[in-house]
Length: 232
Image (cartoon, rainbow, N blue to C red):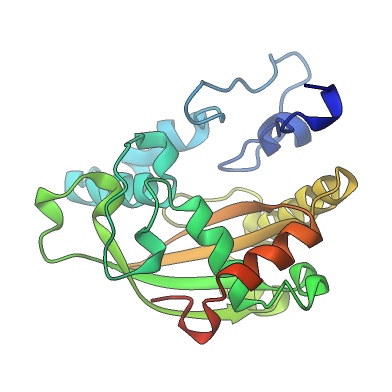
C-alpha cells in the first residue's frame, strides 16, 4: 500500500494546538507535550480533576452524574464493543461519534451546502433512560430534542460556560478553538470540524467532530439522509 493511500492519522487538538482538550489551558513552555493513551487519544485534564470536588461542593451524587454524562458524551473513554440498535439513530454505534457526524451532515445539509460547517452547531438535549442504572455507560442516555444554532447563538449560550467544569478562558475560547481546529483539518483535505453541544440536567458538554472531505460528506448524505428526523 502506498503512503498516499493509507488512512490519515489525526492528532488530537490537545497535541496540535498545544491546548488542553478539556479546559483550553495552554501547554507550559517547559512541560512535556500533552500525552494521549491508546483508547481516548487525549490527555486527562489535571485542572478539571483537581477541581471537580471543589466545583461540586463535595456532592458524590453530582460527581457521579457529571462523570456518567462525560463518559456518555465521549464514549471512547469507556470503550465497549456493543452494536445493539435502539429506537434512536444516535445510539446506532458503540461510539456515538459516527452518529454525531452523520447527524451533523444531515441537520446542516452539508452534502449540498458544505459552507454551513463554518457557522453551524448541533444542539442536542438528552435524558437518562428509565432503566439507566442497569445499562452500560454508553447506553444510559437518549436524545429528546435537537436544533441547529449559529456560532453567535452558541456563544450567547456558553459565553459563561461553567459546567460540568469551569472553562477558565470562557465559552468564546471553545468556539475559537473549534474554528482553529476546523481550519487545520481543511488544510489537510477535510471539510472541517463541527461542534455538537450536548445538554442534560443543567450540564453541558461539547464534542468536536472531524468531517471527511466534501465529496465523502456528500456521498454519506446521499446514501443515508436522515433529513428532519436526524435527532430520532
